[in-house]
Length: 92
Image 1 (tube, rainbow, N blue to C red):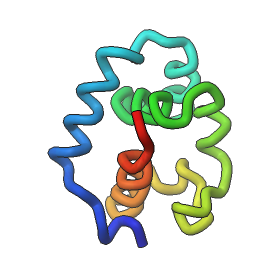
Image 2: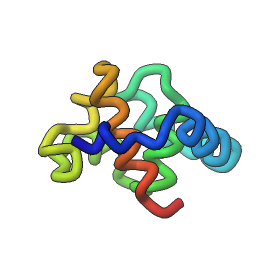
Image 3: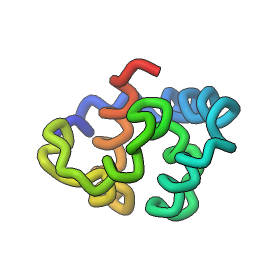
């Protein structure tokens, strides 16, 4: 239940701003974005933390997400916090 430790939207927004400048035009980010929908900020964070293969990562069961796929988290207001917190714990 990583969402219980979510460090907040302000920290998430700061991370998104940081990576958007750097990664928004990278082709792999576009592959990630195609699976996510319209969330370019999240796509950039995934690329910054996971790197190449981020699009495939979205379909894998991830232990830190309690064996959910990242795609399972993006449309749920609680689970998106779980995903965001997991991503914020990766070094960028």
